[in-house]
Length: 311
Image 1 (tube, helix red, strand yellow):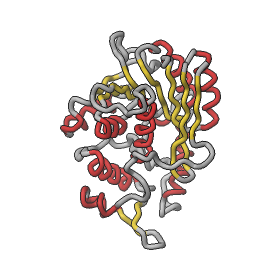
Image 2 (image 1 turned 90 degrees about the vertical axis):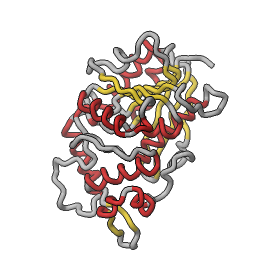
Image 3 (image 1 turned 180 degrees about the vertical axis):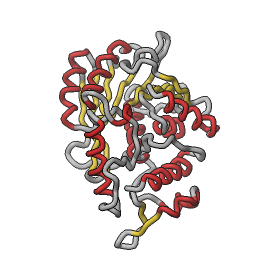
Image 4 (image 1 turned 45 degrees about the vertical axis):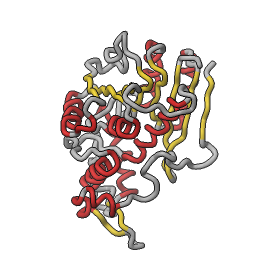
């Protein structure tokens, strides 16, 4: 029977203490690093500096500034239409995942390139490997079923010396597999990461985005109903059966690599998916299951981590 923990459920969680993206964005500092960000700044009714988060170009420029300022990645871009993720939330996943690794290292977060991490479905943005390699020095293997996404990651690595030798992209040739075909018999990983497709269909993804745009944009009446302000291709945003089917497939397949991975993990956006996942992992023989609530303010997501190894 797996041991399980569910942290921070009594109150809305804030960012992890090691997450550098605490509080409001420091636009003054970011503009010094990336001057072009200035053109996208607006002022709130109270006079504070902000950004039109409904504008995809503004969001893209903000990401460039954050990656340059905090992670030394000064040459970053993604192909048009691909997912441009919110970096503070992605950083939170990395820091909480580091705490999972600390459980197997006498409470100390392991650092350096001896720590091997597998990022499943890394996308064209390479966000998790950037944050993990620059925050902790970890070595990453990153996979995706999309050749364009893999080419984008290769370009980001080539243009940023700080990533070279720490990030290796691998094309997943089987779009029905998650770990199969990329984890070899001799491979050992300390951690796997994943941000699974959230929606079950394109229509569901577009509807969800429009709600998001209405909440974020200063110009709520002039947005195209078919526009994704954060971008995203089919395999990044939706898959048949949605998040729960993807995660159940991942959990089932992870059993095959129980001795080669210390901690498997994934984001879980829908809270209702946690209980069936924990039930399945217990049936599969996981020895440990951890559920960690993450977020700031009203937005909450969850990290689920599991292991088949004993102490």
